[in-house]
Amino acid sequence: MRLADFISRDTEPILEHWEAFAATLMPAAADLESLALRDHAEQILLAVAADLRTSQTREAQREKSLGRGPVPIDAPETAAQTHALLRARAGFNISQLAAEYRALRASVLRLWMDDCAPGMPDLNDVIRFNEAIDQALAESVAFFAAQAEQSRNLLLGVLGHDMRSPLQAIQATATYLEALNAGDRVSEAAARMIRSGARMQALLDDMTDFNRTKLGLGIKVTAKGVDLADVLGDELDELRAVHPDRQIELQVSGNLQGTWDGRRLQQLLGNLVLNAVKYGAQDTPVRVVATGDATHVRIEVKNSGAAIEHATLARMFDPLTRGPDDPGKADRSGSLGLGLYIASEIAKAHHGVIEARSDETETSFSVSLPRANEP
Image (cartoon, rainbow, N blue to C red; front, top):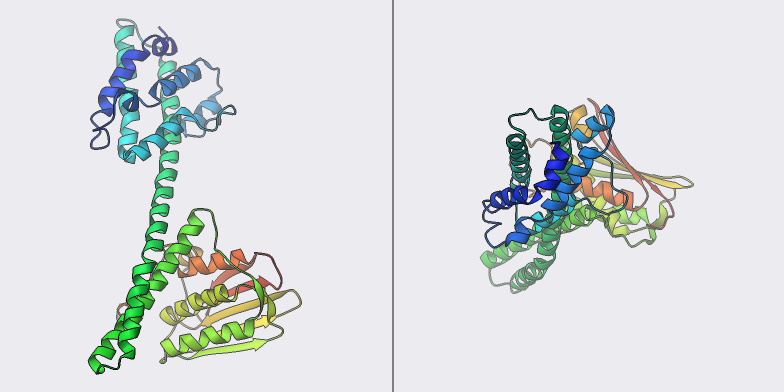
């Protein structure tokens, strides 16, 4: 008997094997009834049987075995994709999801071969079946991973939002204690709380922005007419106060007026300058150069120091990526490795472009922004 006919005839015994195995996947399966344990298994099996009956070229078979089979045009999701989505929501992990397909593959082939005995099974059916299972597994894993990532981002977004209120209460209390003038020890402790609260606030802001981008929302900007010379100057004044041991220079030329979100561009500049302060040569200045022409404004942040390796430069704006720390200096920044990624997303939200270059003499980050746009 051909494998497609066997699957259609013996669907129920195969589903019993599927259900029995799914019931062992603890703790997610503990409270699931038979229907939930079999979730979309019958549809997956029938899709495999239909696939086996469909004439396919060698190239089509190869693409399917690599998980690049044709996308159905009559349904938004395949049965394997929907199965993955529901398994993720039920608390299964990705290893358990893959194990279901391994067990399905083994049980179908074993039952079919027993049915074929003493005759020989059709070897092409075996190959075609494995390709179909590989395609279903690839669809399931991709959908499961996407669902898991979205759930994680939503959780982090909610966490970042809900942590703001208690953090603001801590900061307000610390500011009140500092203003009481109740002695040097109390004032110093309050000042430490304020600084720590500010670092936590910056981390929460980064996490919130990161989650917006991962959820497809992008960086939120509110554009209005600003003079970028004033915006950049104010940000650099704050950075000089935080890093009094470093020289941070600003050079401005041309017209820097335009339509942007000033606060976001201060955030962008701050991230670039802090990166230069951390990784640049400590005995040389960080130079910020802002120039304006007829249509664009260009901001460059330059520092001297060791050249960045080409492989590192290619990943510079990837999220959760950090450069090597100085082994002789502890990193107290509490960085999440999101600064340059968020800077690039802010530039993108303004329809701008950000680039990085590095050689033995200088590392430079440059941002080109259109003078007027609607982010």
